[in-house]
Amino acid sequence: MRLPARGRAAGKVILLGEHAVVYGRPALAAGLGMGLTVELAPAAGPARLESDRPELADDPRPQMLLAEAAAALDLPARDFVARVRSELPAGAGFGSSAALAVALVRALGAAAGRPLDAPAELALGRRLETVFHGHPSGIDPAAAALGTCFRFVRGEPPIVTPLRPRAPVPLAIAFSGCPRSTGAAVGALRGRWEREPDRYEALFDGIAATVEAGREALVAGDHAALGAAFDRNQALLEAIGVSSAEVEELARVARRAGALGAKLTGGGAGGAVIALAPDTERVAAALRAHGARTVVARLEWMREETA
Ligand code: PMV
Image (tube, rainbow, N blue to C red; front, side, top):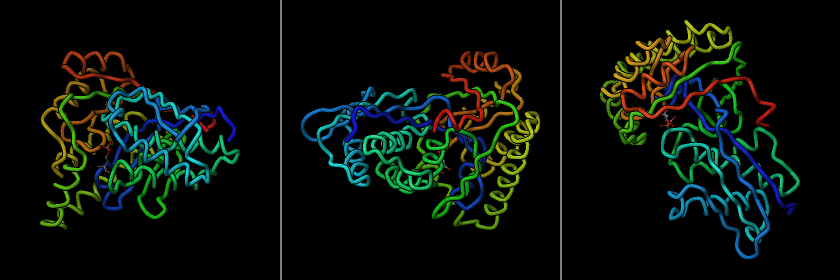
């Protein structure tokens, strides 16, 4: 093994289409500038993973991930330590598990002297992500690997189409602080869909239309139209029952502070809100005044930097 070696992967944000993506509709998502880095260094004994995240200390899954990733790359799982540094708040929907999987695959590929090509990297990243999550749609590893905006349709393999935003997309991201459970939201929606399939299929088609409108607006640099797609998607997310009073209030606060559109992102319920905000600082300040934690991001075309 060639040590030291390093791998980095991006965190993710879903712009449009969460939940409907589980039912085969397209989604729009992006890798963030914020991400996660894995450094491999020599260390005698069984391979081990050290993380700057205290919540991972007693979690056996990162260790399982390390063993599986090494095996997939035909490397012995010994005589190295993998040190993880993350800029992503865990459990906030930034895709930190998938970023860990992809960064680890990249670091091990570098150590083996044979980095994987993009499709192989994504396939392995998806397989490894299931160590953490049961049956996700696979958006997170695609964002981790791409680091830029893309259209996504789930499948074996998924269809991932990178998109070049005409202009950087300024986002304020807010966390309501309420505990979120993507699994519970996905499961409850499935029950409603089973009882009223026609109604929910029509709503998912509506979401798919906002995704395609948002994709065109992103590529054209039309932020007013992208913001309008956020708002239409939020109304449909409310209609399928995955929003919450907190999320709707934060979206209203963002719009009042000048956001061109705002919606929940990810699993929903108590989770995070994204606002398309030319003046991100002003919108973020308004969201903080409402008790939310905030992060600002600018989505750009940056594949070369993250490759
Ligand atoms: O809550 P997150 O950020 O893990 O996003 C979940 C997105 C869903 O569409 C609801 C589920 C999925 O697997 O795509």
